[in-house]
Length: 510
Image 1 (cartoon, rainbow, N blue to C red):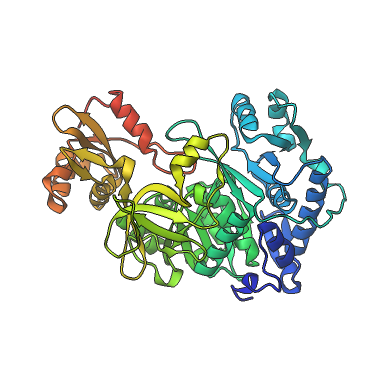
Image 2 (cartoon, helix red, strand yellow):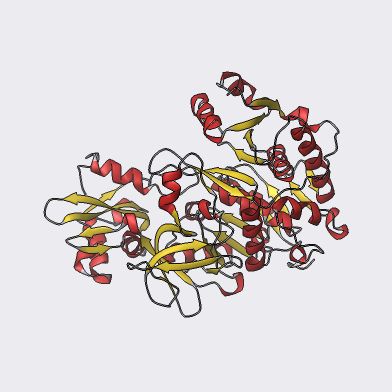
């Protein structure tokens, strides 16, 4: 099967629901394995039938197009079936993060205006504790599997089709609402840029409440005829056995996941089929990038995107990746840089705020019109990230506007300082944040995770920065830590470090 099969359907779909309906019915697709967890394998024909059944049963509860479906289930193929069935039915699923306290789950049911709450046996005790709104209906998953046929649903491209909670690193998590057209646009763009095909096996170990775990690792491969191997959540020590057992052609993760995999031993046979590893959601240093490629023996393909723009907006072509770049703009989207005078440009070499436009943009943050208006203006999503293009259209992220450290009137990029520090052989990870200073306004402080504390000290770290950058970039203090705080999906939580530093929790500088 060629990668373009999903793009050449007789009638081009306008919604993800239509794309699933058409593509999963193709004769050369139906007998292919779509999903497996090792114990259970679902072919594309099975997937079409099972999601059809669940969709029909969901619609029996008088749900209307765009109504929210809260999925409160253990990570499983059944949870994936509910997610896909909701989309086919024209509903708007939201996968809830596992192990949230009942109070938080209850709050999120209100925030999402959930019409249906689908749960499994494992989560029955939790659901019994919830303050479920009167308009919401709890449903046990098993009751949705009874034989029933879904009448063909005409799903508008503008229907709400997915809700995602942001990380909430700067306050209460916001709820991003995406349409059917946005999900389809992202999936087709990823297909075109990454050459996904029916020959691919993707090892899925990321959360399905996260945009990457859903859009790039379920929707896109399931429009390519690929097989998604659905495994337990990521643990570095499990990866050698998983790779050996399933021989994936693609794995996807965040920098922290790949960093932890470096200590594991992989058989050559386990890596033989791997054609690329994908990485996104957080910056990666060039040093770690090269280490990972050497370890895995394949290109590490870096991408860039936000939940507010569905998922991926730029991606390195697997056969032409560029070190340090987050890749080229996906088909169906526009990415430009906004300068200080509000000019939008993609002229090579000029730095500006990365802005995204296209049908992939969210309709907004639910219940937060002011926050939406601050983020999306005149059809452009303002990411808060700084970047520049090269002459071949590759984008490079150079920093984050809010993370910029203003030292005596000079703008310092934490990312730039971090890349120099991590280039030192004995340093595993680093995060640089700003600390208020009476004289200079703000100064950089480096939190460093050493590989061996006996081999590195603060002066060595400062000297490394001084040699590569100018004096103003040298950290005023270096704090050695065992690990950096992370968000639920493995990103370094810079805001936590900044808050702790501001609160004086790191008084002893080494």
